[in-house]
Image 1 (cartoon, helix red, strand yellow):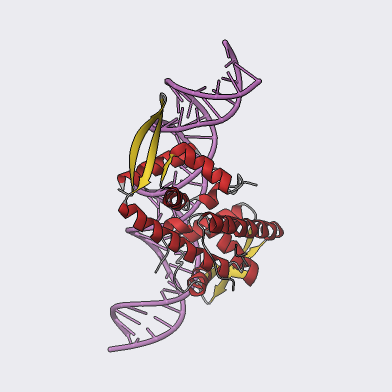
Image 2: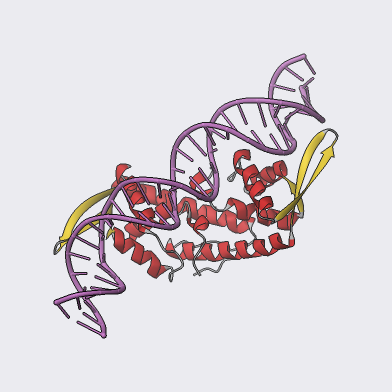
Length: 113
Length: 113
DNA sequence: CTCAATGCATTGGTTTCTTATGTATCTTTG
DNA sequence: CAAAGATACATAAGAAACCAATGCATTGAG
């Protein structure tokens, strides 16, 4: 089962920020694979969605980039800036709050890990 | 605090369906007020978002409508169709699953009610 | 009698994502 | 070794969903 794309709208940026917080340095393709792995294929980020998002994060100063070569193949590594780290905490806690609200609204019981 | 509109994208339809499931019959304005009340003002559905959504639900055959008058003021009541009831269960359980996945991804602990 | 609240609705614009496409490198497999 | 699939970047056109603004009308409160 793959979640309807409607559901994922609005959470992509937060997911990317959180992954960068946890892993310090990641490149685009790596992010798509990590999300796929962590969600058992239920969330599949397309490149057409990811790259524009990463570019926006960079424009907004939330991440810095370093281009590195693995042989001739380029990898663009992304790292959170100090501002990005703050934004990540904000975003994650807003989403946590939102999910509790939704849980209440929809009368859903979630399992704690 | 009001959630960023980004976050609400994709959940509005599910919220509306769930409210109709719980309350049987509601009109548009009533839905905006109910959501505001249930979420302590954290989710405020604008009319520009709600009415198009309701119209789509009607086009898709998930709700039926009845126009009633309270004096001269019209109210358009929405009720789930049998198909709408099934869709609601689907949507709510998909969202529940999604929230558990997000909780895991973001390493968030939620409180059970 | 004026203003806020109730109640419907649409329009123009933006953001965000999808689908499709393009380029190029590296690895695996028959 | 050729072909296919995986890796790795990126953009462009379009759709979907929402926001902000506006419009019209009724009702109730002060």
